[in-house]
Image 1 (cartoon, helix red, strand yellow):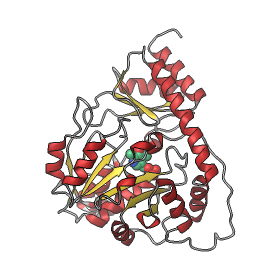
Image 2: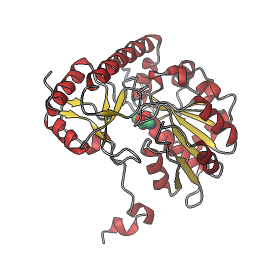
Image 3: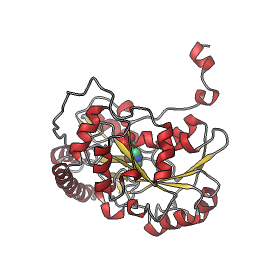
Image 4: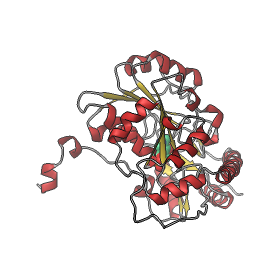
Length: 356
Ligand SMILES: *Cc1c(COP(=O)(O)O)cnc(C)c1O
């Protein structure tokens, strides 16, 4: 047995690490598999402080995000993507081998992976299959005994939001559980955010990221929004210099008035493209699983892996979601720019033998 295998924590021996889009597929030239933005924006970088450690938290960045989200600065923590916020929540609030987190699959994979890495129990309360909404009776029963509940709205991989009244009920009926609402795609439906309700619910945590609509997946910047006592605990487990100076500069510019204007334009272009793609896919033998409030679509097809490989052979990458609970043979397609979506449509028409 190799030394590392002998020494590693026993629960890690069985752990299958997260298969990110970037890790599981390479090559291609049309990347529609990671819900990234197709737009790449330019930034001004100042290298005059790169010999200095950055701030633990940049107050300029946190204030800019607080203004954008409509919360107070002491309700914001910035970190290395919302993936880091997920991990910090688990590390700060879950005792290994004793505490549990609740997830509602199909959902984002990192909640369970982070919990398992840390040795916290993962309790699944699957979404209802007829409408992909929360199974409220089961959820409230299980959540009351857990430290954290992870809810994703709008959902990755489904694309649709959770009902506002259900979120309100979980927050009200599980007052001793932190209810984490992951709003990674909220820029595509800003009116659905629960961030404005932080003052009402001491147990609410909202996760945000610049990786999707803000087109900054490579900068690695995310935010946890919560009441200041929760933020204070999270900061105990946050690294001393969590965000590179370069990332802080880029993120602050993305949140400037100009940056936000560009965001609005790009979001509306993506929504237009999403509607165009949805209609164009309608006649094909693919069944849309849910309405999308995001920059991606989810379809059931006859043979997901075969379709994915056929597209990959043409340089187009989409993502298999068939390993998700209750999503057999499903593929997730991120919305690209017009040319990328057209390339996808052409290949799909070919694949299904429909003449354009
Ligand atoms: C992409 C994504 C994240 C991770 O975002 P980062 O900020 O890049 O770590 C978190 N949650 C959901 C639901 C996502 O889709």
